[in-house]
Amino acid sequence: MTDLLLDTHVLLWLDNGDRRLSERSRGAIEQARGEGGRIFLSAVSVWEIAMLVAKGAIELDLAVEGWVERVLDQSGLEAVPLDHVAASRAYTLHHLEHGDPADRLLIATAIGLSCPLVTYDDRIRRFARTRGKQYGFAIL
Image (cartoon, rainbow, N blue to C red; front, side):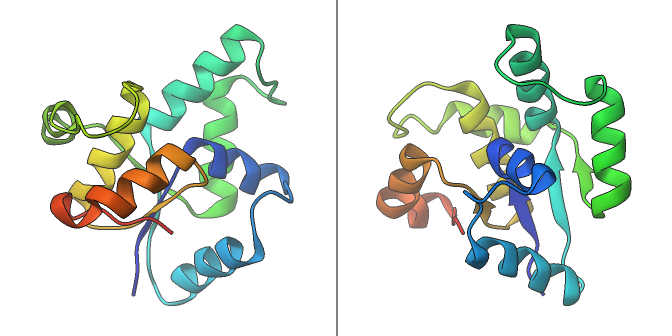
């Protein structure tokens, strides 16, 4: 049984059926569900989505809080809060190519949950290849 944490863009793609989410990723998510694994939505992603809506970068069919509630209800995702351990661990991820706090927090959350992060972010993928073992971090 494998648990998975979804990166923000993966969550959005999953919700709207975006073709950028590969069949491999969709299959892994469905397999995890079918085997009793949990699919996590981080509070960090909710914050990122709210910021994107506020900037006009994306539109949702509901207010952010309502949209998140609908996604949680319909998809069986499990919300995971940002805790102090992930917040402090994120600071140590200085090998990440950029200083995006959301990416660092998502990586730290995945490490804390001991589960892969489903992402298409090239910088996160490079970090996983070069430093993943060091931090106990994996991607899917």
